[in-house]
Amino acid sequence: MRLGIIGLPQSGKTTVFEALTRSVPADGNRQESRIGTITVPDGRVEILSDMYKPRKTIFAQVEYFLPGKGDHTGAKNDQGIWTQVRDCDALIHAVRNFSGYGFDAPTPKADVAAMDQELIISDLVVVEKRLERLALDDRRGKKPNPEETVLLERCKEHLGNAVPLRRFADIAAAKLLRGFAFLSAKPMLILLNNDDEDDVLPEAAALPEGEECLLIRAKLEQELAQMSDDEAKDFLAEFNITASATDRVVQRSYDLMGLISFFTVGEDEVRAWTIGRNTEAVDAAEVIHSDIKKGFIRAEVLAYDDLMDAGTYAEARKKGTVRLEGRTYKVCDGDIINFRFNV
Image (cartoon, rainbow, N blue to C red):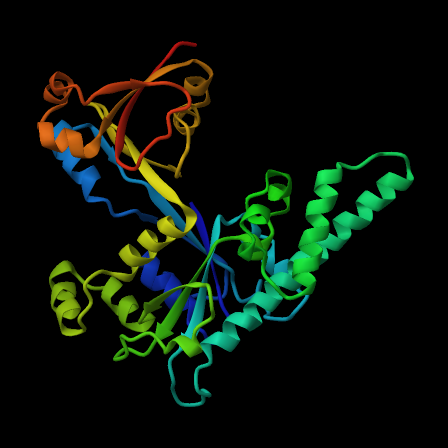
């Protein structure tokens, strides 16, 4: 999973990136685009690893991408700044909600609207170019896919009305439109970047309606990320932080994108795999290897809670909680799966 961090100038998006990834550039250069990969915290993986004592334990990972200042001028119609962000699965929008010398009072609702306007304009350029190409193909006798044309016309209408495409679930999920990677169709988590001493969300009237919002004290969390475990423990207590920004953002991102984890276990490896909710077993198999999907026979499934209740896999089998499922079985969060296949 790759999450792109965006935001208006002075929103603190670089501080947010460093708080989430626990990284500071060795050379102090914060101008270039940056990528940080973090381990998704999951206590279930640790427990399974203690149980199986494998040679390798692999947690799921999340990748954060921060466009460099050279890539993001903040200017409208600047298509270059969005090139790499289009590859991201979702967007994290850092929004200033702190005061300070030289700053106007924070206006989170207006800032979200301003960034949405950039995304919308960028998408509108893509839509109009594609519609022009389809019209040209039609005049040349090459018949376009009518369903694609209808979807693009709907996109054009919504974007023209300044409404981001993520508000329309059928458009955001349409397979015919996936190749366009529309920015305003991507799931978005809004991170309200507060002052160090402020752990309260703004009043509802100051928040954008219908958006996923989460509070972060990025400067504080950035300092926390550079501390030892013992130092961090006291720091957390002093500022009433019950979970780190990384933990909270990852969890909310998973929820926002409808993602779950399933596990494979054994003496060689215990590993968490990330898939979308309602993914069928045969497609979950492909996440591991395309050959497993190709030769899929059955999925041997045991729920994590059932394993904990039984104590061992063998005991779970005796209790009848280990079951065989077919291709269309929808994998649940926490399923432990052994795929049977033949290639």
